[in-house]
Length: 178
Image 1 (cartoon, rainbow, N blue to C red):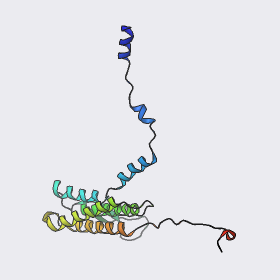
Image 2: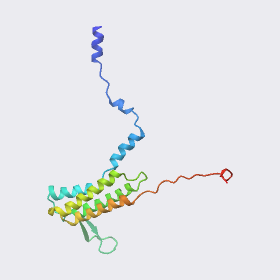
Image 3: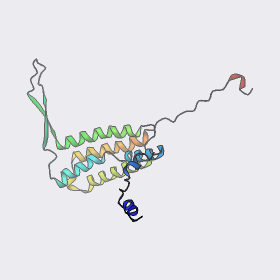
Image 4: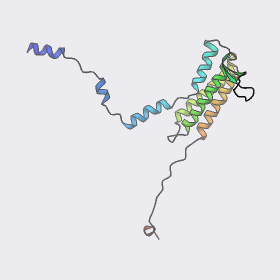
């Protein structure tokens, strides 16, 4: 009996990993997880990047990031003798514009934008306005354009509502009340 008891104590303990693989998640739990991921204002990313560039890295927004080659006239073979310089501020605004498109698509989805999305977008808009008005170091056209994009996000999220699903009821003519 003593050896049997020791072998029971030395047996490997079951891990939770296989148990978690077989636990079925309910559709409601999956939807709740997805909703938490969705209720995040995407314009927070360029706003945070702007603040990191301005306050932590001390990089001027006018520093060139890269240059796009341009043709002066259409010739064969093409001659790229001009270039368009993209600055740090331009890049931040371009990323914000792309994320604004994602926000508008998110607000127009059939499930609709939740109230938490609207509240977070509005708080982000207020934070941008406050920083633009109260922080002298952050005064720039980049932050002004980010604030305008945030304004568009807030009011597009409120005004865009998917049409409610209409219920169609079909009745037979001979069964309709006279």
